[in-house]
Length: 368
View 1 (spheres, rainbow, N blue to C red):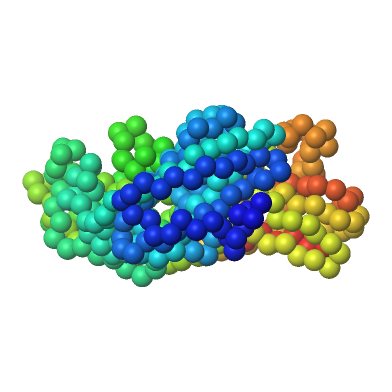
View 2 (view 1 turned 90 degrees about the vertical axis):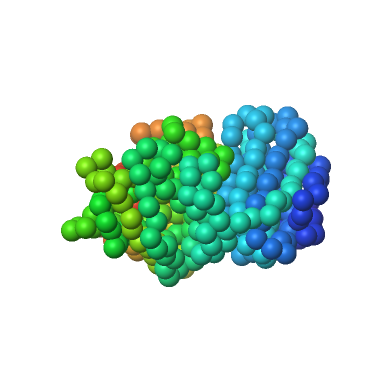
């Protein structure tokens, strides 16, 4: 169990084109293994988790331990992460799920990347979009791009967010007119598939501009498609991607059920727990677990830090211990910015959720 924290992660060294393989086991007694690697240059990184006998997840973490990509399929399915990364230090996390142990094979390698922060690799097609790399605050712009009406003539852009971010994408200096469509890579295969749905949209013309403006998490790969209006004979434009970071403090995306809830730890009298993350169109539910060490009055607080308002917060206790939050197990919902309730010592769950048409960066606090 010497590799179950970032500080004791097993070193993989400098990741390169030569395939690296490691084999080990995770389960109830050793839930998580961490591996550390570095990159000398911007690269496309690929990790595969295979040979599973039970469910296990694969996560890619930045140097501070925040998840920047994940593969979480069910059962014994192999997991895979492909992501373009800048030079630096990163971690891979293998986490067992459920009550069964499983052996696994972890394999990783790189290919040279063409993007990077503010970069412009790619040629703007669906299969090879302009790659803007990771947006870490500030602006990234391109000038005098063109778009047509057919998919082959549309322009495509690819990017990631370094943190939860308030994102704005705007067209300017437009001749003709067109529409922007924003997608996230829902199946995490690194490609904008025709089956993936739009998560936001905007447009621009000679006389008006409606930017895309919303808060989104750093867990996704995003694609932008620019389509010329049929009524316009041409479309040439400048485009600006602007991000304002709203950092969270949760290293992995909280699940939506008790077995995958993020554990905030124990709460004693005079103590305080805090969670900062995102809920919305990309991820509607965040579920947290905490243990109250002694009977007493507990105060819950929430703030919508950026984006839409009215994040819903509900407190539960799994009274029948069936790992399902039944409708009758709700203790109550938070009305307003804060509220207090007397609770017995025990394990509780807090659900933060937002509708699929809203996007919010929130802060949740629990104090006793």
